[in-house]
Amino acid sequence: MQFPQIRREVRYLASDYLLEMEGVSKRFSGVKALNNVEFRVKSGEVHALIGENGAGKSTLIKILSGIHQMDTGTICFNGSKVIIQSPRHAQQLGIATVHQELNLFPALSVS
Image 1: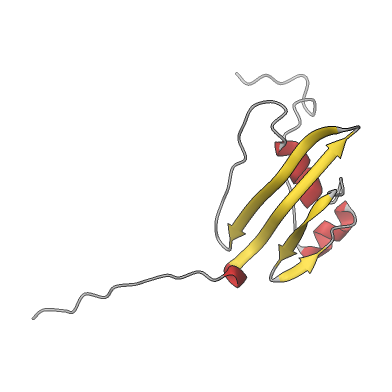
Image 2 (image 1 turned 90 degrees about the vertical axis):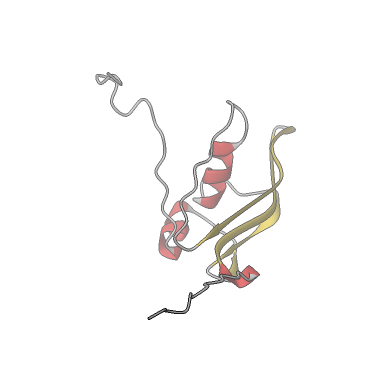
């Protein structure tokens, strides 16, 4: 007995993104920290932001978590455009961040 092969095709629409950050820019005292950044996450995905020092990783996460306000751009979360006003507001939306802080445990080493 042979079973027909089932082919699964997944097509994503723009609304399938849990998080969309488009055209996000941020300056600090005239210095560009972020310039027209786009970042999208679908439900169930895990992303790592990696890059050199000064690449803007922390700034992007701080905007997403409500610590900094972006100068330009849009954020859509769960299909709705949002302006994240504060860390508390981000938490109320369901956005949680884990910050890499090396000074939390000064007595501990990597080894």
